[in-house]
Each structure stands twice: as structure tokens, then as C-alpha cells.
Image (cartoon, rainbow, N blue to C red):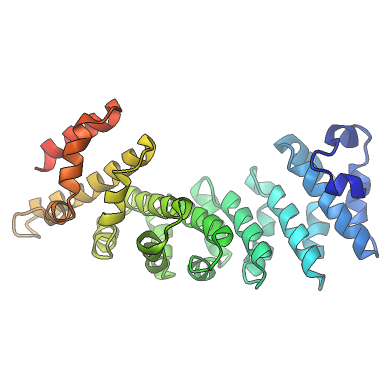
Length: 309
């Protein structure tokens, strides 16, 4: 069992064919802490191979004893490994694993960085998809803690926390409003303006872009007032065409709201968002993008310039 729990590439198919998975599930209830922890690692290794293997482990009833173990007073090592195995269980289908949410909502209050990172990773899997999944994550009461985790010193915690926020920003207006009410916007913008780690910066900007893409006019005005234009402008200089496209689309959505406000007579007959984007030198960069090697980017740049300037 120790070989299966530690080996980088254990013979998982041989284990499955031998029919011993039910036995490892039984060992989650062993009186020996050592045996239970090894069983946790073995089941996590099996579930990590593929969704088929994960479903096999769940089909043998591993989830409930694992949750029971996570609710016991166990060692930090056990908590780390059990949280990792739980994260291996949390990919779709959602209905099979949604009962883990209360446990994850508790684990993200841990002081241990490894447990935090793995619990956030599990929540990122669960929040990725339809609005009913997003709603379940919100109702688990995790948003307030997410605002705190975005300010955590470790990138291993911040990154999966950003994935959760990014996923929730694809939800409906009520779900996006829940993020605002949880005061997540301020730490998110802080990351955009102060973090020098590319992976964190790009995830934070994509989260803001998702909000701009799916948000109400009021939300977009709020994000503009909080300084979201400059991070989107920085996207326009990225070497990845997909990142540049995200930046252009975000700025275009901001311009659409400014144009709607102008047409309604709210802003004295001018597109204030166009003025702000111009002041941030975004228009000059958009002009340059007319000659970008990517056709989609160059055509979008021309369209934006012709529509709003």
C-alpha cells in the first residue's frame, strides 16, 4: 500500500483490475492513523488518473468516509493529504460531489497553506460551469473568505482563489452582485495593480474581463470607477493573441456602456468611457493593433476605432 501511495506512477490499472479498490475504501475507517492516511493517498492517486477512475472510486463509496475523516481531529499531514484526495474527487459530474461544499467551506479557513491551496483548487473545479453550480458555491458561504484569500502571501493559494472568482463572474447578475457585496473587487484590483507574477495578473484580469462581459451597466461603471481600464490596456501588449483579444473585448464592452450613457443624455452628449480610455493611451495602442499579425485582432481594432472615435 505504501508503494501505491508514494510511487510517482503506480500501476493503477493493475490495482483496479485486481479489484482491491473497495478494500482501500474500507481502510479509510481503520483504527490506525497510518493505514488510513496511506489509503487516502492510494485512493487519491487512483482518482487522479482519469474521470473513469475517479468515478470508480466514488462508486465504491469513498466520499462519505473521506468527509468523515476530514471532520475528525487528525494530524496536519492527514488533513493535507485528505484535502488533496478530496480535490481529486471534485471534477464533474457535480451532483456526485456537491455534498463536499460544507467541508470545503470549513477547510478554506485553515491556517495551513497546503490545505488552503488544495481546498481552493477543489472549489475552483466545483464552481466551473453552469449557474446552479455557481449558486451552490455561493450558498456554501465562501465569498467572504475568498476576499481574504486573494490577499494571501502565497501564489499557490491566490491562484485557485482567483479561478473561483473568475468562474463566479460568468454567472448571472445576482451572482455577480454577490461578489461585489462580499468586497472582492478591491483585493482583485489590488492584485491587478500590484502583483508582478504573470499567472496571478492574467487570472485577475480575466476575472475582471468576465465581469465586464456579463455584468450590468451599473457594474461596468463601478469597475471603471475602480480603475479597471489600465489593467485591460496592459493586456493589449501581451505576446499571447488570446490575451490581447480579451483586453480588446473588455475595452469594447466599456465603450458600449459609455456610448449608451451618451445616447441617453446621461453624460452631456459625450462618451466619458472613450475619454478615459483615450487618456490612458489605449486608443493609441488600439491604432497599433490594426497592423497586428492576428487577423481577428486587427479587424477588431479597426471596428472599435471606427465605432467610437
